[in-house]
Image (cartoon, rainbow over all chains, first blue to last red; front, top):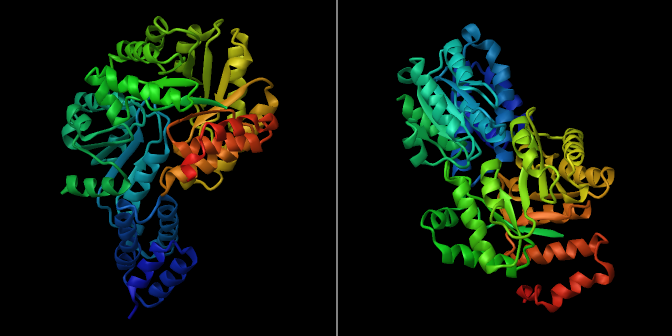
Length: 210
Length: 267
């Protein structure tokens, strides 16, 4: 019997080599590939998210854990029937028009991916029209908007307006985040939710989709 | 070392509320505290007030200069806000900031061209945020070239090489401080300055890392900082770092700081 908690622990420790070795062992012990991913790898990453949220782990550690988790997933992926992982939902993410800040948005994208969501990252300086196209092309259920400047916050509002005009607003959940963003602002512009950090973003998406 | 006091920024909660409530007394107290602690410029920012920024920025400049004889650092990318603030400002302010992003560059250049305004030139372009020294140098070269061609003396330019968080890339601090050195070497007469808090994003004990980073950047030639001048440990570290970097003849400033009791917090 393979102990999946060891795999989770290696993910938490960000130990790339150990994760690879344990994933191989789990595969050889005929553990269901989806169980390896969901209970071992993502299971470990969930703890990382929780500890990150309470300032018990920090960004570089989260990045190390994510790298280790992905090394494990790469090994398991070829064994999945049809190559498909469980998809908890498809998130279209990007930094709004006029804003070039990448880091916070990418951390959120990474945490979502590590939690089992499919993430389509449109990058920075993304126009409302590009968000619309992104949702349509990928059948997105969630749109996550990032803005780091007081000057670009308003582009979130115009993005939501364009979603409305193109008839997509009711079909997607809109969440926003970034240094100057508050819950008040989210309410003002008619977003469905606001998250203060990457771990909170994962919780928010999970809540909004249920 | 040029110190810009960063506290009067609307995105700080207490200041945002004071602006909203038009609390003259509080804003003026912060300005006085910053000036007395050694700020050479008082940064003023009303960026969160969409539509009202020009009015509020002008108001902040008036308030600050009523109580301290000190120029302001006008912190806005909006030429309307800058012009409103300039119309009441006494002395020569600093503009924070122009960048190579086309819209911002085209909007602010006419305000700055041919004047004796000091200007922060932020290393950012429409291609995104530079991560390496080479990327920063390319942007700095265009910014400095463009400003000088438009009759801004190089001595009035403060290049901000753009601090990026160490937590996401272990080489981000080194790329930054190497950029400071390269910019100061290649463009004689220009200055460099930056804020610090980005470096420690995503890490604990941020204050400590900000301070160590400042000291390392000063060693490479950084000669301006946007900081909280009420942070005694930081201010003492800066004067010490400048002396160690060989920019304090006969340790005059270091000793002055000692006699002004700037090290007394050490007990």
